[in-house]
Image (tube, rainbow, N blue to C red; front, side):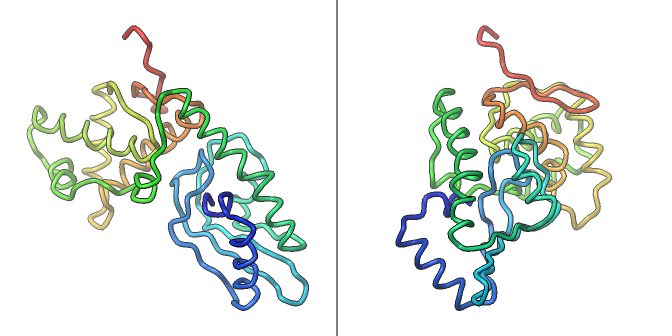
Length: 227
């Protein structure tokens, strides 16, 4: 979605022309508005050449922890149809763009500059395979702890949140989830299912340094300045 909000007039003209000549435009790994879990997904755009109706699709199953009801309905419905391409562009400017701008301001005020290269390579499964295998094994508890902590902190980075401390019972829950996960499920998916919501909520609320506490549910609390 960020590619839309930063588009120039020329880019929008080209996008409209391309959408009119194609049945469906597919944007894989599009960055979704802040508060979405996962933070990236496939977004589609379709424009009816005869009526001008423009529909923006999004994969279903996105969890949203933000407060924007128009974004929530779009995600729940899996798509939004607008009478024209011009109104689609207006929707991007009025609904989507302010959410990214609020997120940018909260990062700046917290001392965290956003790097485009980091966002482009961000992935909810960016955890080394060897760490995943060890974290899901029957390794001795003392050796498991740093691997599990690494997995939690790596997942937090996907939401631009930094973890300062983690309660031991949280790590125990993570290990139980890893041990019971199906073979084809990556440890990154397991960790994202467990922590994606709390980390996304912390990011939306502007908390960049957090402590992770056991639940239920698991929660993130902002790190105290003097701690």
